[in-house]
Image (tube, rainbow, N blue to C red; front, side, top):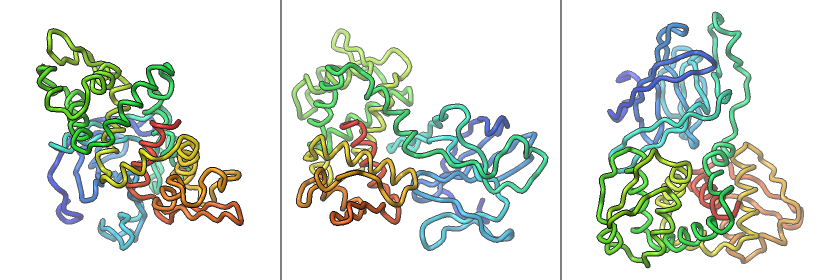
Length: 329
């Protein structure tokens, strides 16, 4: 690796299947949250497998070209390098860099740019990449399908916390501790005292996520629930916004929020021309929803009833999609 791009030495080892081929991986963290898997397999032999994140594309260069970042921020790999796409979503804890690979549903993902032929029957080099918006839908589905009353209370509590960046971080850290199985019993009353909101706000979020409050002890006795995982993603996204951006998201009304979920979904799916009939009636000029759409890079032409996707899917757009989906889907 030292002859390629110098990584930050944060490692994680795991095994998984790509198109029915078991590969053992070691993760090296590079800059800008890009991860390279150094993989080995009896079927593939020793290979270097590069996986793009949501924000970075992997493009083939010349066959003798070293791995490097190009001017657009994409990563260039030698021609013929097996590139695994949309096979895992890596969850990375901000405070210690702990990595948890999250396997996507079976059958998704594969290789692209394959030159070897001894396993060509199991690999489709032209297979379309899995759409990023589907991963969001899969992970956040527990928030969408819960009962209307529970969802209403939970979303109301989340919106309250969105007004305080320190509280977003505090809850995000707590959820991360559960996922990393590093949560120790804590005094519930002491944890509440250090907060900025009424106890009901915290209790609503914690109980929905599966926490147990017993004899003034805050516990999580079971494996992380799907609701906790969904909330961890949402609070992780919220933690990336500044105060102004959080207020903009909070001020967005439901009708505009639903429309923003749709245009973000289409953009992340790779659509350039967004289809949203009569959008000027919903994303009206001068409204928070319109301002938010334009701040994310969308070009809205009222006269032609046309919306154009941003030239690049930014981290802010991705994070906004997570939050908007949770709030308005």
